[in-house]
Length: 408
Image 1 (tube, helix red, strand yellow):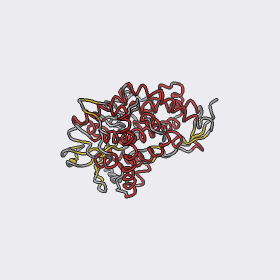
Image 2 (cartoon, rainbow, N blue to C red; image 1 turned 90 degrees about the vertical axis):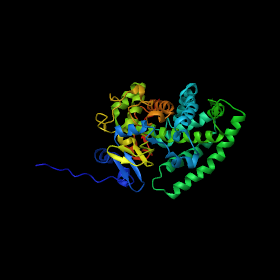
Image 3 (cartoon, rainbow, N blue to C red; image 1 turned 45 degrees about the horizontal axis):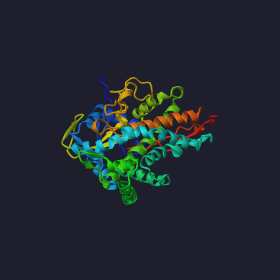
Image 4 (spheres, rainbow, N blue to C red; image 1 turned 120 degrees about the horizontal axis):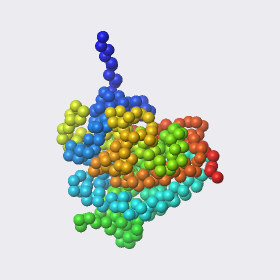
């Protein structure tokens, strides 16, 4: 007798159940709805590793035009939505600042900032690491890169939070739209005069370097620099924040692996990479089809918005061994290429649009993990409560309250 298994109902990515436990529904998507059409948003969500990787690498069948409505209304046109020669030129202009000598000059300051922030709670015995560290540390680094006043940190946090909310506003919430439009007014009024002044009197900061950068006779305009700094805020703030908080959370949940990192600080890189696979900070990245495209047997019409579900692809048993197990020692990821466009995990996208700031994010996270573990020899969840993750497009713990015996 043949037993027919019932096909689970198609998940609703906007449901409360999905928000609480997306990985249960990610598996249903991979197994039964590898291309899920979500009627309310009109988006197609793709969940298998092979398909998501193909979309990121295919710059002819898929474009980044979606950022025209996701980000451009708030901060302007950026390299993230460009293609062809325009993308090449703009990426070459920004890459030296995030991967070259300037990054090497910045790294000691990253270490100093982490130490300075940890000093404020090093002796407390109890702290919310999300609220008191990971939420602000990446923005502190960016503010240092840009040589902007640290007292303006709350403004930057509000602006990048509004940008993240705006780009993931699937329900077209009017309050989120209004928040984004407020940033559209406030942010340029703040940053454009600073850019103009740095162009007249350049220093050694990133804004000054961008005003002087030139390739093939082309320079950034003030408007382009404004948009790029906005992109740095969103890409370098929210994502690194969640990478750090999530890595600490999962290490605490796996004491033997935490102790291994404490004994050998170089393993912080492996912990970060496994977190990027197991629980990527950016769960969904959008692309737009340039023609009718067949994905996993479903024809997605030209001009459609496609949601590449990183969080599902990274747990695909077709690609990773025992994917639902957090294991910093897994052998199916090449650590040497984990921060390049040929990475095995899918957290920074892949191919030519791979995140140009990945090396800075790596160093920030490694510094944060090692300094916090050194300061907190017996770090544990406060009251034994494991903090929940929140978010659809980006996801991580909103709060990470820990207790520890202060190191002497």
